[in-house]
Amino acid sequence: MQGQRAGIVSRFLADAIDFFVVVAALIGVYLGYAVFRFLLEPRRFTWPEPSSLYLGTLGWILLILYLTVAWANTGRTFGKRVLGLRVVTSEDDRLPLWQAFARACLCALFPIGLFWSAVSGRNASIQDLIARTHVIYDWRPKLPPLEG
Image 1 (cartoon, rainbow, N blue to C red):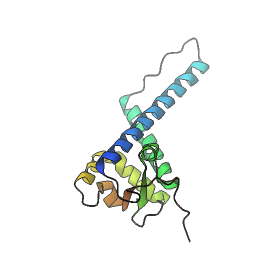
Image 2: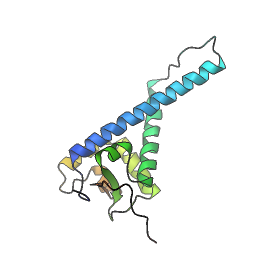
Image 3: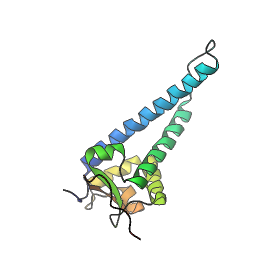
């Protein structure tokens, strides 16, 4: 299966793991902010009560940063590493930063586009079609260096 395009089940499981990683990061940011507030005024401390809009926006930003950095560096997020997947360009190379960012924005804006890979003959999500990427099975520790 090495090098073949990944199917919907492995992609969905990897994305579910990544969702929980971002939720954990969001909880960490919240707790860090609470500790900061406590250290400033320990006697009048109350737990922060952020709005849903604030939490949603911060979570969305964290998701885009997490996906962009991971895909631009190794082509893998934590979830994709666990499942042995990698996001690559149409030429099987590492994603440049702009392409990783564009794909991350598409995934954050339209996550249901992943399910297109269930009916696509190339196992490509809508995000893959737009960003000209694909997800492959790859258990190698890292991509070979770019030539040029």
